[in-house]
Length: 344
Image (cartoon, rainbow, N blue to C red; front, side, top):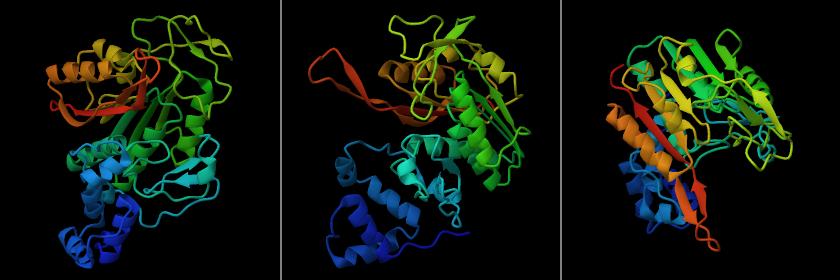
């Protein structure tokens, strides 16, 4: 279904909602609607202005093409009671995320400023991988998410692939916490994916470790950021530790002859994982990694670029110094990197 052309009324709403003010003059609404006939391009023109980014308080990477979302939008998507529905029609049960209940039944707009669980760079990375598979004439789409939590990007990739006619799917989720594995199974089932296309691996990827431990999660709808470790740290979590199985990145890759997308969201082990494999022969067409410190930003960039991968999206994590203890750094915004392997 073609996207409706933008109108002066759309331009007015962009001024009010994104810039928080009236247009400079009435003719500006007509001129802008003519300049950006696509509503997606119109919104993009506003969010990439300095005025909007100053109002937002954070820069938006100029390389992000929000027009990609129009290709995957479901114009017939509606809100569903008990769930939050994204712009593609994907659903997230309100019990899976503690902050989802206040959005019960809502239909979210395209995630220009992020959505219930993801940022714009993350969404565009996943959708970009699906579009690439379609453009290359692939009849199959395979994705693995390590540190998957409840499997949000598996569901997004799977729904996007099906929307583009890629019916042959393989969704691999790797997560050490059994509570989150149960959430992942439910989330993927809610979105129409059963055991015939889903492989859940209850294990931790801890580079260099033969065994690992992971915190017990008393509140799985809140606790997604815990990292597995080869041994418990000095300050144990309130609910204790449990022993978990381990798996290497190489063993994950062996589950599928070739991945269209590898997602790394482990909270800190991304660079160490990639150090254990040969990036020049890695059978992954693309890679999305969330980053949580500037050192990881630089290390991933150095390692992947030297191995011949092409960067498509780079939004570094944003940090600020603590106002009281100058030696303490706070993460204001997670980073996101999306890389494409030109060998595949």
